Image 1: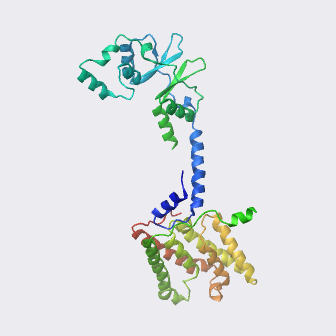
Image 2 (image 1 turned 90 degrees about the vertical axis):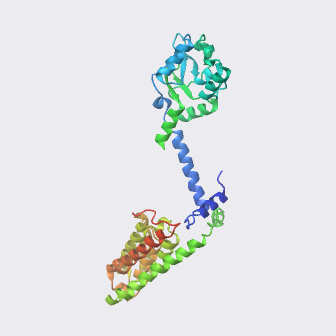
Length: 189
Length: 178
């Protein structure tokens, strides 16, 4: 939190005579901070920034099939739906890495490094698996009315990168990624 | 009780400026007032005008000593002085028989007008007051008072401010024009 000393030091660093008291500055700062917060909190709803329709995987899809699908559409994750079309999980690159015995934080270089040193293709083990073996179950989803502020809280709290947006029956309507949210905030600013 | 509490103040004085600021303020004020003064002796004396009025001392404090202040920006310096001068002359013409009334009207109305036009410039209050209490030499000028000495003097002070404040490495002026 801003202290009086911070303000005084900043005023001193500005060289010229600043025609304002530290108290007034603090008042302006705190009022404008509250206004900025209010503006960010009043950002729109999920439906305004979600990508729709969303590309989904099915639980019975084989992993090679799912990987090609994701590669074709240039997506790094997707919701998984059951036969009724209800979202039952999410697959992301992290799930692939985890299944390959690597930490979720690993990147492409970890895969290459492992493959070259162990001399065995880590991915080969995934060939016979299905999406349901890989997916994160109990997916975190939101509704189209969920506010962007709430979405941002969910991203941070659950350390995830995409949130499927579903209707009340669990059917997917769209998806919001972290970058969708960042773009939306950037436009506001 | 609340009134007494408010009277105690709530914050502290802003920090003292650095020595270079003090020097630049001095240089600016010296050159600005010197220019207005020499203009008077060179040109205005020939037409019998007094160019150097008291309120320019106050303007110098702002345009050389507190250059970031909204009160010190060109819009305020020019607008504040000229509008206040007009208000001062009008007040004298309307209520000049009762000097205290004309003086009070001049200053109060000048402040209100400067507020309303976003040209608040404290020396404007003095400019308005001088129009009333400045004696016959000022009274004879009528509304021309707003042009010379007030308008011309303000322009000269501003010109010096633009040069000096931008030569100084850690200064820039103005923050905005109009």
